[in-house]
Amino acid sequence: MPGFRAVGDTIGPTYKRLAFAQRGYLRLSANTALSEVSGVSGSKMRWELLEYVLYVYLKLRVQLVGWPGDLVFTNLSNPPLTGLGCISRLVALWDSGAMHFAPVTDAEYRAALEDPYSCAPGPLHRGFPENLGRCDIKKRKYRPKTDPLGLRVGRYIRNGPKSARVVSETAADGAEGE
Image (cartoon, rainbow, N blue to C red; front, side, top):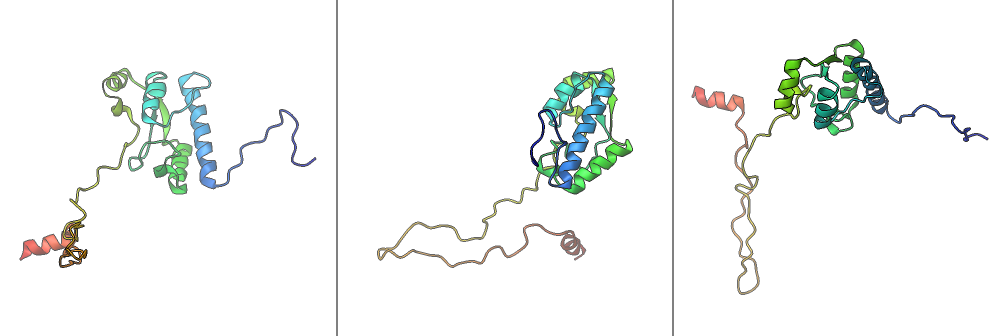
């Protein structure tokens, strides 16, 4: 009958999107390469920083070299890396050999024991957002007081801020020129 398979007859994974297929390929080839470089069969690449440090960097003494500097090092299933462009770029780096596994030296190993964040293959975040202050400045605030007739006592309604939240470079240069 169609749709049924014999016991033990397995088929390969089927993916609904190309990004999922490339992510699976990258995980499988990274696990295979890690087993070859470390000499430990069945070893797996860990994509979270703490697990990477403990189970790959310190335990196997192997590091991932060539991670792009503008991509956050995180699990391949996490949102910064879920797009087809990011995964395709990682696969291209992996296939070209620019991203690969290499043994860890004794000095790097000691440095990782002191500071585990030092052995991250790439950046861990994209920086901190600029603090622009309160978002409700010059806006109407809730006033719970009422008058004897039960009507709200209001104030003159202002239509929000009168200037931009951030001064642009051109405006700053123009102000300095005056």
